Image (cartoon, rainbow, N blue to C red; front, top):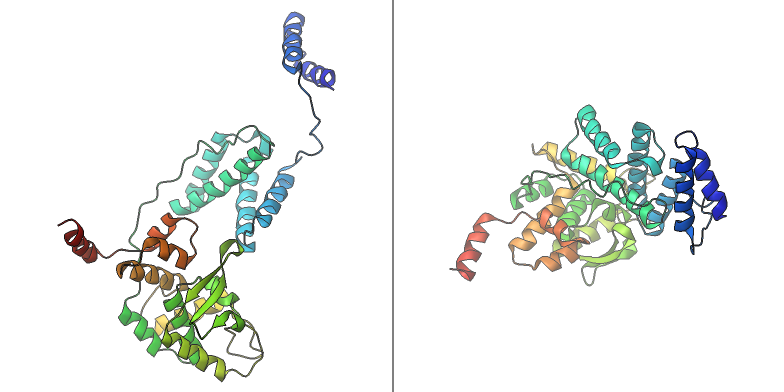
Length: 327
């Protein structure tokens, strides 16, 4: 097999080198392959970009990535393949840089969007490298995009109370209380079943990112409103939150988002969305002195940096703490 590979390489060099040069290359290849086993991996190597993508997505699925994340990976990488028009083993660093630059110029997207694309492309090529399908990831030298830090808004207690007062039914009130007191993701909220809620201990088990389970906790007010909502229902759906109209299907993420936007519109407050409740809880918890590691666990973050990005620490409290600990 060694001889076969050497002859194949030399045949492709004919016309570019003279006979004496070819002989030198032959000896160099023969010396390089000496005492080494050559394994034919052509059949196992992904032959097309689509093959490589399918293998990568399968690996991500096994790792526990959500269907939503897998779909995002697929769309992002397919767009890159369409633009670059090269087989994955020939894509280089400049190809990726040029693609990201042109995508930003054409679509006028934010730096955060470009960095998300960079992260996915890097993950793909790192996986190819780890699987020995390529020698080195071409995305390794493409660094994280610097994103200007913006102060993200949170809900004040007055705003949350206004939203509560402007709910037209007990279900919407229960949704607001649950999001505000637990800080769970909206995807976790809509996946909850009634059986997941422990009213005695005021806690429930949610299924987070990567199919990881964790406990979240709610207050007495949330408990009362959840029980009142469940008592008012006439359906037999196992879901904790269902649509208001028959046949009362499990509520979807879009249903929660639309509900919150309508409530915000009634009180003339824009940007009322589920994630803002999560950020508000993180900020409130740190503001009250909860250790950052516990906030991280409460929110289900794999990295503490993510938690720090969620919480907006109040400047006045920093001043008080400075006086307390350093004054």
